Amino acid sequence: MTDPITHSGPADVNGEDVSLLAIGSVLLRRRRLVGGLFIGGALIGFTAGVLETRSYVSSATLIPRSSEGSSTSGLALAASQLGLRGPTSVGGWGAPIYVELLHSRALLEPIARDSVLVPERSAQKIAVMDLLGQGASSDATHTDLAVRQLESFVNPSENKALGAVKFTVTTKWPSFSHWLAEQLVKGVGRFNMETRRSQAAEERWFVEKQAAEAEKALRAAEDRQQSFLQRNRVTSAPEVDIELQRLRREVILRQQVHSSLVQNQEEARIREVRDTPVITLLEEPRLPLFAESRKVALKLVLGGLGGGVLGVLIAFLMQGLAGARGAQSDEAREFFGLLDELTPRFLRKRGR
Picture (spheres, helix red, strand yellow):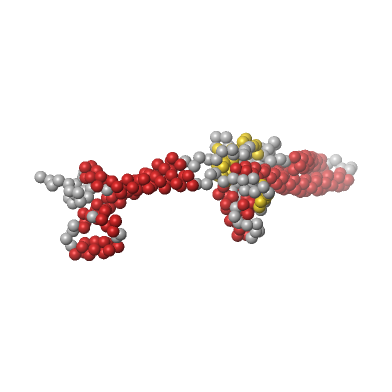
């Protein structure tokens, strides 16, 4: 016959299955400890929720799109005329690039050096670095810290279904959240415009260079044809006719290449002037009227659960120590004697 399970712990010394009654007896014996930690955890969670600074969120959604006529650029057309394989699109930027762009120093550093009117803080404009607690210094270290703070406020994400980029700005000032979201939208548009215009300028320069070289080649072919005709005015031999036809074909080919490059050159000039940001603003930033929920009830429940779990673990630990205290070895007696000296009286009494 097996011995009944004792109160020395949740499992017996023979390693048999844990008895629910034994576990229940341990929890009931330490119910004050478990209940106290449960209530304490709940109070900590409630206090953390109530004391948490209110935050205000402003969001925007951007849709990157290819600009008109950018699917086959003049650069690609010019390269194809020369038998080269060039890029097929100038505006092929996707949403992941803009997700990274919203966290880049190229956008955030100019914002960190700017000033903003925050009615919740001051009736006058204040430097962003001063607002963030970095002072109005232009020191590189303070600027870097301000940029990192701004980066922590911004949360961009990709909407793959729409091919869009949505970002939220969360701060403790509603007007600053709105202003920062607007500045990011403007910064994306400005950066995109400058980048695309630089690409268009590079494209125009390339086409102009190829057109100039094509014009030189055309003139050289025409000069060779003219010289040949002058040398063979009265000659009608078959080999003369064949050479003349070859020279004419070369001139025609050079004319076609030159005409195509001149047309692409004019298109590149027009595109450089009219090129605009390829960003569609699906959702504009709005001034947040209400603060985000601080989730006080959820934090209260999670705090209580955390305290309760901690209480259960401590209860079983104390029960195990109480069972081990009855060991007859000298090492055990010495260990618990030293432990009693280090343990406060109120815990010492509970542990026994």
